[in-house]
Length: 193
Image (spheres, helix red, strand yellow):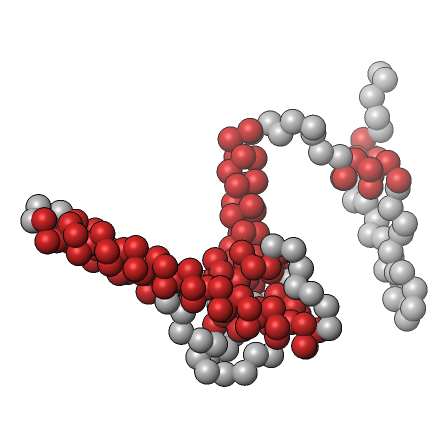
């Protein structure tokens, strides 16, 4: 009664004739705007929050790992603002090129800590004097290092070191060489870049 004609159902759809591709042409129909917008739409709140959270954490972890690897290499673009620039690189090189008493202070303090458990008066007195002697020597060494760095920055860059540079250099000198970030880019006794 109101149905379709059976002859129309039996016919196979005709194949669309392919036109040869033209060089320099797009060779495809322009997509509809509503189709493109629909493909770009994303919900404000994902349907599976746990999976979205896991994915965000994984992306953030990958980003942090990439930045850390670049920092370890000393890549200038990946360094935080406090480590960027030729002045800071020169200061790091000046610290890394010499033996610093501060870098041996931490391992020595472990030995001092072990000695402090001995309940003999001679051990306590020895620990007391040795610790204060090392701290005083480390402070003097840091002061001399800073004077040398400040003079080198003045000569090389014709400007005073930026604010906070003294603490930057001294804290680096108190770290063990293997734990410094960015990694030392110069051997001991080498000339700064």
